[in-house]
Length: 87
Image (spheres, helix red, strand yellow):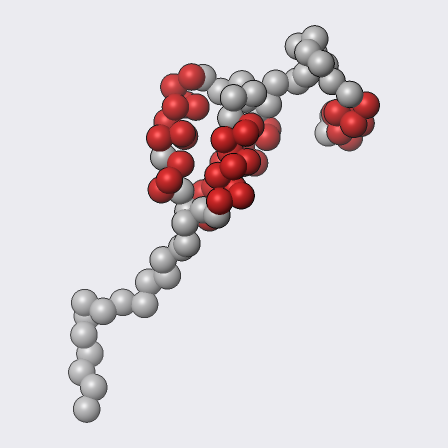
């Protein structure tokens, strides 16, 4: 007969971030408008991020990117169209 064991649980352990997510974060973190401290904290936690945390981090970094047009940086027609769609 099976006995109830309160120490055993069926908790779902979320998988760690995938390699492509980490590559995206590393590639866009430098052009973000975040403070150096926040960038460093994210980079330090990179290997411990879960899949969902990585996805949220990517979205957060994309929302906090330098506006290349307003900053006077190099940009192309694709960036202009993307910018106009997101105004």
